[in-house]
Image (cartoon, rainbow, N blue to C red; front, top):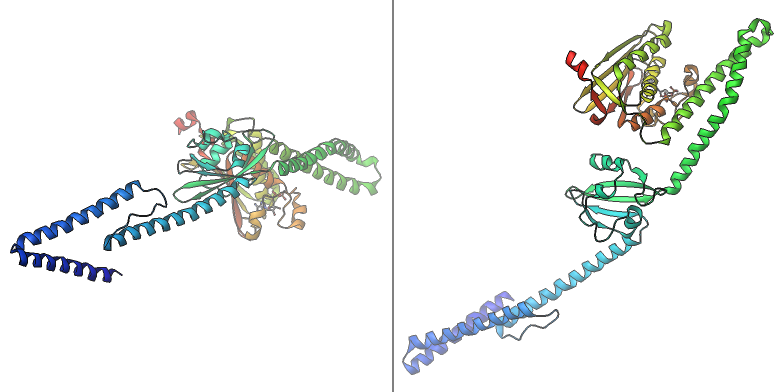
Length: 440
Ligand code: ADP
């Protein structure tokens, strides 16, 4: 096609020049006739160019191009076809976008697109009901201004969105929503929000049931254990055949009491998101008492327990809850370490926050159990567990306490070679004691 037009153009030019030369031959003015001929051709070309420019500037969609002669006609038609093709492609793309928007608008879950600074770019209709976003006023607003729950701000600012966040809906306290964030493209965020009120209610019923049963069982059990203790105090008056049975009954009774206490503690921890206390806790002295208790628990087993703690590092939170969590870790180390084994407790702070590690040279845990270890009643070996008197709730309590103190638990262990449980606390939870730091 190009080649054709090449030839045609050359032919036209040759024809023009020949015509001009002929006129020149007749008139005797070669130069003038050639100049006038080429001038006329240039004028005609400029006129076509102006027509094209005018058409491109003013034409309405689907308006046919002006008629053109020769190559100019071809240029007009090609531009017109290109425009038509472009319109068709745009139409098809618009149809796809409309369909995607219609289907996301029909979703019950909210879909929100945020730019790299966390400002709202686009959202579907469900986002208006679940998060109370207003179209179009909220467009371009930072999402943290519209979802003001403190946990959301923390969740949004962190790097790791592996787990979803559950909070009450900003529009209605009784509606629970679950948020998932994903990064895509150029650090933009996609946020999915689900209404999980029903699942939350069922979960709440389960928690209430466990808490109520534990509470109701506590009083009768206290009475039974009290009588058993009285009977055992006066064991000489009891028929000797019953003495062993009474001892076993008391042992199991106190196990049940520990279990109920742990269940009630878990229920209390689950009831709120944060501890009511947020005072700086002197972790070093707390660990010192836990170490003494661990030494007493270890008794004659000859275990070597060491504590290295930085006294200037304090931790904001509830002393009672932290005591439960830390003592669970240390007592586990005592329980699951053979006689004459070593247990090392360390407490220190660095730029990533504060850390507590409890390292033992005990029996260790197979790596397949590690992901499930903090589940309630999860036991690596149930037969072994009944010997140690554990409830299977210790690590679940640790996990909950840490969650409430913006911390996470890291477990590393090699079967037969010991385990290390490390709690990592966020820098916001750490406070330094100026008096002790100055002394150092
Ligand atoms: P329990 O009350 O049974 O100790 P936990 O929740 O505290 O329950 O621990 C769950 C399980 O994790 C335990 O049954 C035990 O098998 C394992 N475990 C916990 N700590 C250690 C440890 N330091 N060394 C080896 N195994 C451990």
